[in-house]
Amino acid sequence: MNNAAGIFLTQAEFHHTYVCRMIADLSCDELNFSNNVIKNNAVSIISHLLNARLKLLELAGHKAEGISVLGGAALVSRVFTPQECELVSAAWYRVHDVLTDVLSTLTEEIFTESCTFEVPFSDKSLRGVFAAYMTHEAYHCGQLGMIYSFAGKGRLMSV
Image 1 (cartoon, rainbow, N blue to C red):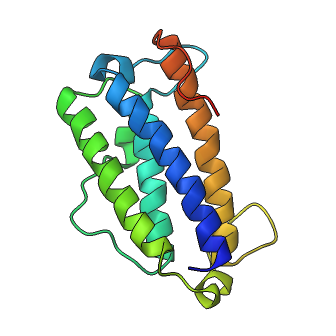
Image 2: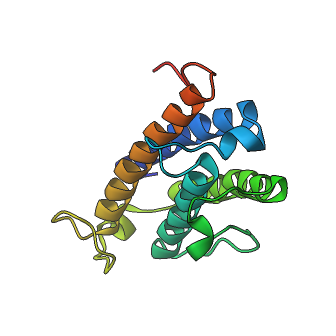
């Protein structure tokens, strides 16, 4: 594994642990919580992260087959059913496993290839896309931490 992949794998693992704790500790009703501070509920946010991780895998040349996720207009914050909460939870674990496998095999050559996906800074390589995505995912983990706190559970994780 190259250095960039190792760094991204560490970040992905931290975010995965964060989201897994939330999924384990909160009921579907609590995962559906939103207010005027956090406009989207946890199910919407996790679904958004799942779709972004799937896009990242696609850009790295891998397709995660057989994983059902909610997408598109379904991500507008709404109350999700218990079945949808379970679908998102199961998909989170499966997509993380695929991402871990893919990151462990990516070479430096693949990371430095130019990527057509738009990122908000000058590094237009796959490495740049991964860096932008991990920053994006960290932002949403912060939102999830606020939802966890609003649910009366205290701090999601001490870092």
